[in-house]
Structures are given as structure tokens and as C-alpha cells.
Image 1 (cartoon, protein in one colour):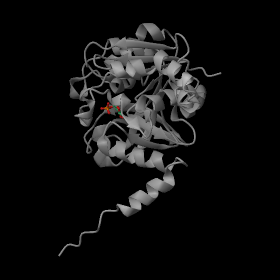
Image 2 (cartoon, rainbow, N blue to C red; image 1 turned 180 degrees about the vertical axis):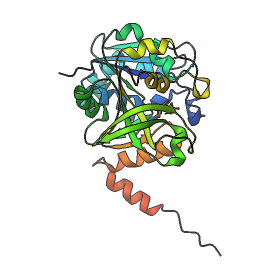
Image 3 (cartoon, rainbow, N blue to C red; image 1 turned 60 degrees about the horizontal axis):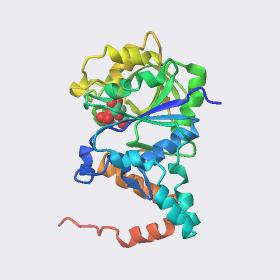
Image 4 (tube, rainbow, N blue to C red; image 1 turned 120 degrees about the vertical axis):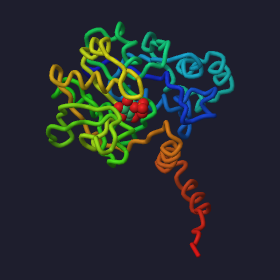
Length: 295
Ligand code: G1P
């Protein structure tokens, strides 16, 4: 049995990097092969033993909220037609009764503000946060790996990945005190530091296991990078009292909030599917961009 039962999914973001697609489609509903991004996040949470799913949503996200509803008319029709494969494809979209709670973040005040919305639902137990934009492909789900590691170390835990110094300004970055295997003990965290000011190149990726102390900390938070209430700042403020560990997960992370990361993820997942990979490979070989020789 896991000791982490609840996960918060901040899904209120506007997805401006994906306009115009996200004008009327929540970015979490963008489809990687045949499943929306949110399905990957929920599946990863399930694998980690999560039983309660808390979506922090916003206006205009109706398609995302409907996705985990029972589609009674559709299911009755598929049954009548004997389309068992299509019915089976809907299985991952079913949530046990009461397992999904959808909250609204009334104003886009940042990730820290989004997580704070779940305060009353979390109570005093450690919980997970999953950012569905960050899709992590691997043998074992990144959150399940973290839940195992967290059992031994406790405190706040953030997923980490080593990035190039030029990229530190896109991430929360750890100030690393010492590193043992996959674990990095942090003495601080900075949100989106300039390359020349970054304390390391160990970046935070969108998976967190947080002690419930973070919820009180979030109440006292002041705006940080970009004028937003940053989860990174709240975690940083808890370094001495709660302890913060970075966990270098096994797997490949794709930033599916960016067009480039999304295209790469599509290719990687297509290559991983036995029913798609040969066809996909052959197609890409035929469409390789001709080399342009510079005169
Ligand atoms: C958020 C966090 C940041 C983290 C990143 C991972 O930033 O604030 O610390 O490194 O997710 O994807 P965002 O990408 O939402 O700006």
C-alpha cells in the first residue's frame, strides 16, 4: 500500500504556447497518439497508487472535465453495436465513484496558488502534484519511482533532470548540498534563474511529493518570478523545517506544453507502439528533409 493517496493536477493553465489549438481545447486534451495528455498523467498516478484525483481547473476546461465522466449514450450505442474494442478503449477514462474532485482556480495567480486551492481536500497527509504538460516515458512511472524513494526520505521531494545551463531559466533549479545516487539533498530552490545565476543545472520537472506543511506555507507566499505565486518558492522556504530532496527519475521527459516537445513525444510514443512503429519509421524515411548544400 502506498502512503501517498492523493494527487493534485493543476490544469487551469491557458496553454498560450499552443495557440490557436488551445483557443477552444484545453491543452491537457491535446492528443498524444490516441490519448489526451491528462490520461497519461492520471495513468501515471494510478500506477503510483493514487486513489484521489484533484483537478485544479478553470473556466473553458469543460472538455477536460467531461472526459472522465461516464458517456452513457456512447457506451449504450457501442454495446448495441457489439463494438467491444471501442468500449474497452474507454476503460481508462472511468473513475471510481468519488475519486475525482474538480476545483476551480478563479484567477491565474501561479502554480503555488493552484496547489493551495486543494488545501481543504488534502488535510494533513503528504500528497503528490503532477503537471500533465510534463509527459515522462519510461519502464516505470516517474511518480511510482518517487513514492518508493519518498518512503525512506520523507519531506518534500521534487523530480529532477539535468539540463543545459542555457535552459535553467525555464525551470525551478536546485541548490544541491550533496548527491547520492538518484537523490540530491537541496539547500535551496530558485524559480527560473538566469543561466549565470543558477545554483546548479539540476532542474525541477513536474512531479512533486509534498508534506502537508506546504499548504500553510503557500498561505504566506508572496509573488515571485513572473509576478506569480510560485510553488518553488514555498518549497524553498521549507528547506530547513521540512527538508527537500531532488529525485532523478528514470525515463525520458517531454515538455508537451511546447510544440517541439509535443512533436518529439508523438514520435517517441509512435516508435514504442508495435502497431505503429514500422509504418511510422518507413514514412519518416521517405519524408526525410533533403540536405541543402551551401554553395
Ligand atoms: C513549472 C514550475 C517549474 C518547473 C516546471 C517543470 O514551470 O514552476 O519550477 O521546473 O514547471 O515543467 P512552468 O513550466 O509551468 O512555467
